Amino acid sequence: MSALKDGGYTVTLKGKEYRLLFTLNALDEIQGKFGGYDKLNEVFNQNNPDWVKDTKWLLTLLLNEGLLEEDENAELLTETQVGRMIHTGNLQEVQRAIYASFVAGTAGDGEKDNEDGEEPGEENEDKGEVTAAQED
Image (cartoon, rainbow, N blue to C red):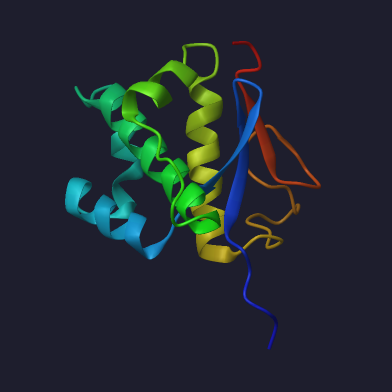
């Protein structure tokens, strides 16, 4: 049997690397808010009147789970801080990173999610990294 995989997914926001992490705590919160992780497509659907708010909430949750996994005493990000990291130029990349973090969290890092072996999103293939918002 192989070692447990990390499950984190690296994203760069405003020039800083963060890890998105779908933990059981995150899945529990998602289930409470949306009814289950299988509702992610509905979160990003522009027919959802709260899709912007929901995207910001979800990204904040995953970023904070990554921070807490590294340091239980980490200073958590607020939704307002995370909202400043997202703009229309990187919104789709952020959404792809959220999906990719879900795949990494369920399959573990190093696992491939499709037949040609590529990770989802526009990432650095050897690190599974999405760069979203390089400017301040």
